[in-house]
Length: 328
Image 1: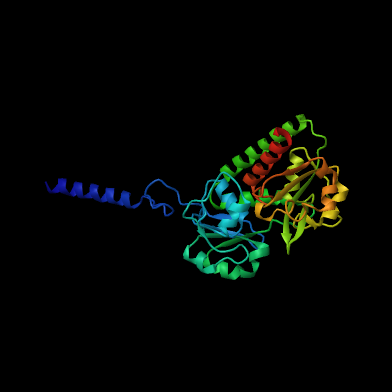
Image 2 (image 1 turned 90 degrees about the vertical axis):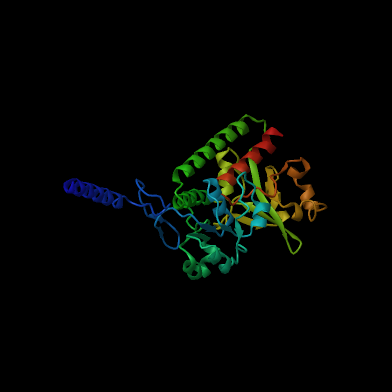
């Protein structure tokens, strides 16, 4: 009997040792069989950022980076200036109601960001470099720069590169590749539709307009711009060029500068509450004398066609161009 009890004790001790040796997945709190998440390195313009695993609580300080998260199925916990985001950016994917507004893009609230306890902050160099140390004291912070100074590296290339880095940061690289593949399909379909349409010309001017001190301001997009590359991909020719590299991808001009582009179709983005065409330029002789105005070749894309966005915004821009040039 004593021998049987001893054997049973040894057996129970062995079972206990096996149970104790089972690994625990610290990422999700489950036991057994799960592997510990691998470290991730995100390439940023102000230095690489190391994460122990995919980020779960991300604050995006720029609209495009918030859009990129939505594109791969991730909800940020905080975003800057959500109200104006909704005015300027129109994509199918929406923020959840519990996403927190953390201030303006220019001056995000460090206090609100800290309260959210993020494990990653995504920032933009030209706005947030000055508060780099404060942001990094809250959470790992990666900086991107959508305005390359290298003439051989345009804004579209940067958009794709940054999109992939953000997707990698949240463990969604395969989803990102699917999004980019679908966008390429959109370009192919759009180009086919434009090629088969009876357009008088494929030359276009793409503009974004607004007022400053009541004076009309017109941005003409240059060849290095994200929006200009999109035009090329769907078979349109952006006729505006610049003698110097426009870092931000556009030249800001007045209405008189448009006279050299009268033969092109005029595509424009303008907010309804700041529509210079219906207000400041309504009775302007120069504007009304332009050939594309007289021939009704001005085409609105809507104020929420975001020309500085990610893959989802690019698709919106393409769909609207095809709709207004071909379908209508």
